[in-house]
Length: 332
Ligand SMILES: NC(=O)c1ccc[n+]([C@@H]2O[C@H](COP(=O)([O-])OP(=O)(O)OC[C@H]3O[C@@H](n4cnc5c(N)ncnc54)[C@H](O)[C@@H]3O)[C@@H](O)[C@H]2O)c1
Image (cartoon, rainbow, N blue to C red; front, side, top):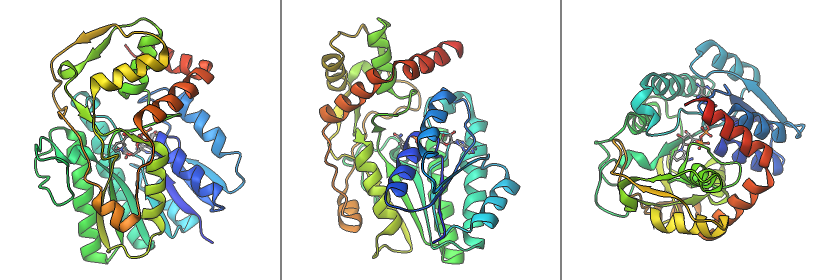
């Protein structure tokens, strides 16, 4: 059976998706450029776990390099692509727009073009709740207007959805765009609040509570996301062009999230209440009816359970946590 091509396997979600496919006996070709947006040590540690599987091939490759992407498709001829590599992060896109242009626009076109040339049977890719921009109607539904992204990151993710539509229209390429809502868990992302807040609480460093703690996020646990991605890769009955929310359907105020972390860390945070940041959205809240109907998706992990597993993992990996913190400090 041809391998599944997963991009971004050194990243948080790509690592888990690849691991779950390998656990089910599928061969996986993983692609990543191991960039230093956050500590590369963490990316290498995730990849080392995947490399224990004989059916896993790790390829260091920049998806913005068209020839390199072409070589991967020619050599491995995947029938299914799960495209998760991207320059993530909303705030970073204010200072580093070209990283988003390269990875999220050029890289995306390189991937989808090779996918349609082969052709692959299905092209599943990561979009984001950020495409809903400043929408105030809650919960966010796939049928809501998404013409007003409020960050370049969001604009590139919305562009991906439009490009996928065009490839489906022109070439009948079957595409599934998944709008992820704030994914968290063990082996997670150091640039996200759950990680940096825990790190700062444990090191007595003040944490900045944006928008005075009034922002609400639909925190979605990684295992639930992986189940949803798996369904998107293999479910029958999907239309040939799909956009589907994958969220928890239970938004939580930032202050509740912080107090849960404080309880689990056994320590109070030093809090600095600050105004909203440019590019931030006040709330994310997923309508998951479509995911339920088409993917049988049902998030099962409460924020308390998920954060408990994250904090447990973090405390069990002191060397990695320290490497991530030292990398962060070296970038200031
Ligand atoms: N984690 C979330 O809450 C969340 C929410 C919405 C959308 N997403 C999207 O889900 C996907 C996975 O996110 P994640 O949280 O695992 O992020 P991540 O940063 O941990 O993983 C992305 C991986 O892609 C790789 N990558 C970036 N640019 C590349 C390039 N040009 N060539 C090759 N590899 C490259 C990075 O090295 C990284 O390992 C991304 O597309 C992201 O935008 C994530």
